[in-house]
Every structure is written in structure tokens, then in C-alpha cells.
Image 1: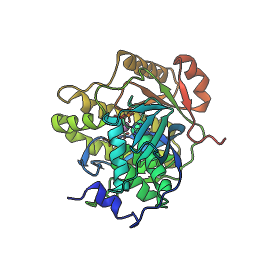
Image 2: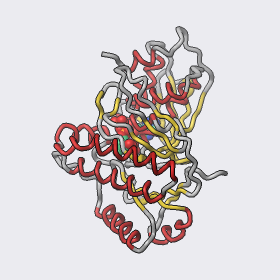
Image 3: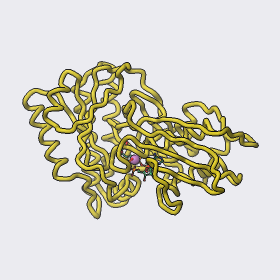
Image 4: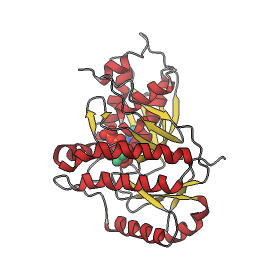
Length: 332
Ligand code: ADP
Ligand code: DP6
Ligand code: CO
């Protein structure tokens, strides 16, 4: 059985060269067709292909530098984390894939400008930024597809955060997963807006990884998911090609609700929604009935992500107080 270290090892030189420090930014991304379920838990290979849009300036900034204290140090948003804590452990074991048995204590200093572990895809931007920073720190000069494969091994959704704009993560077929990575979709959609409805930004009780495992293990309904996802992926590609906003929004919302149906059908039930999440959904449905084309998607958390066109931004900001609007294709 192949391990992550086997895969990364193929791309490392015999002698690692490293500089003084390196840093990188990666955007978070929102899936319009979700990744939900793994066919290989070790390499993080998905059951289905997924499609997302990256969130421009929202994401993770990560810096790597040699540590002068003689041991690894992990900082999140300026705060030093105990190395035995899960967050730091995951970061250090990812760094170990590159450093291997070389004695090289490092500082990993990362900042998220989105809430961490709240269903706003911090694992996507976090592992993509870490991969990009490691690539620079060790002067590996890897291709984007390889970077996407590596990021995927940290967190599946991170495979898509190597790129901006629309991205498909093709599930691939190979046992080593080298064909399971993000591919940018060359579609530009300047008036597309994403509005974050922050119901709760606290850490969720069940992380995405455990949530999808519980669903696979216990939800009979999960059997219908791969076909739903495959059909939605086709519809999304068609909507992107024809720039059909309503088809894009409707497919994304249907896909998210189908994923949540499989979560709810798990045992114990996995309900990421809060009462305010449902209230926000109902408001979206009412607005649509009133003729405003607005749709939502939701991940493993209580927050909604609205999809709408720029001309409706002011109205939606008035309807959803505190709405944070991202324009993925805005030209600065
Ligand atoms: P989310 O919905 O935010 O993606 P997940 O449960 O998928 O929630 O993942 C949260 C985990 O992602 C964190 O516990 C941590 O392991 C990892 N993570 C989040 N931000 C970063 C970061 N900046 N650098 C490295 N790992 C991160
Ligand atoms: C609901 O990528 O966070 O957001 O691969 O176990 O780290 P791991 O899981 P993660 O799962 C994301 C699930 C999702 C859907 C999506 O982003 O496609
Ligand atoms: Co995640």
C-alpha cells in the first residue's frame, strides 16, 4: 500500500536545499458540486469529482522559517499552539513528508482570514498554502498538478485551492492518485458574487473528515450520492459554458441539499444546521419566489454561502445583515 511519504518522496531531491524563509497565500474555495466521501483514506482519494470556485483574498497566509528554539513551532493567527494539539500535529506530520528524517526544526506561522474549522473551508486554504510554502522553502519548483496532489493529501478540498477561479477536482482512477488533482476551468464570470452568511463561526463539533466517514459507514442514502454528484457536475459544466446563472445556482443548491440529506441520514444523525441556518434558507426561497435569483450552498457547518449576481448585491446586503461579499473574478 502506497503512503503519502512514498508519493512526496518521488519529487524530492537527494539533498534538500532550503532558504531563510518562504511564504505563500492560498484562497479558500466553495464547492458547487461537493466532495463527500473517500475511496482511499490514506491518500485522500475521493468517491466523486467535485467543482468549486476559489474565494479570491479569503484564505490562508503561511510562512515557514527555520526554528531557533531547536524544536518545531506552529502558530495560528499569531498564537503559539501546543505541539500535541491536533492542529499542530497535522501540520508537523505534513511537513515531515518533505523533511523526512532530516533534523530541521521549523516554524510554521499561518494566518486564516476566514474562521477556522467552521465550515468555511479553512482546511482547503490551509493545506494549499502550506504546500505552496513548502514548495518555495525547499526550492522544489513543482508543477501545479503535483502541488494539487500534495495539497489533496493534507485535505481533499485543498487540491482545488491551488488555483483561482472555477476548478474541477477530477477524482482520477490511479492507485497512486497522481491523476486526482485540481484542473482550472477557463471560465471568467465577473458579476458572480458569493455572500457569506455567518450563522456561527465557532469550531464545529464534528470535523469534515469524521463527518464524511460517518456518512459512508452508516447512511444507506449515501448509495445515491455518487450518481447525484456526477449528474450535477455535468450540469455545472453546461451552466458555466452558457453562463446560465440560474442553472448554476439551482444545481449548486440541489447538490448541497443532497449532500446534507446523506449527512442527516447518518447515525448518529449529522446535522450541521442551526435554527438560523434554516431561517436563512427560508429567506432565500422567499426571495426567489419574489423574483430575486439567489441560491445558496452549504458545507459541513452551519454557515450559508449565497450565490447571486452583482446587480442584486445591495438588496441582499439589506436582507442578510453582516453579509460578507466576495467577487471571485473582480479585477483590482
Ligand atoms: P473547514 O470547514 O474549516 O475546512 P475542517 O474540519 O475540514 O473544517 O478542517 C479544519 C482543519 O483544517 C483544522 O483543524 C486544521 O487541521 C486544518 N487547518 C485549518 N486552517 C489551517 C491552516 N491555516 N494551516 C494548516 N491547517 C489548517
Ligand atoms: C463538505 O476537504 O475538509 O466542504 O479531505 O478529510 O480534509 P478532508 O475533508 P475536507 O472536506 C470538505 C467537504 C465539504 C465539501 C467540499 O469542499 O467539496
Ligand atoms: Co475542510
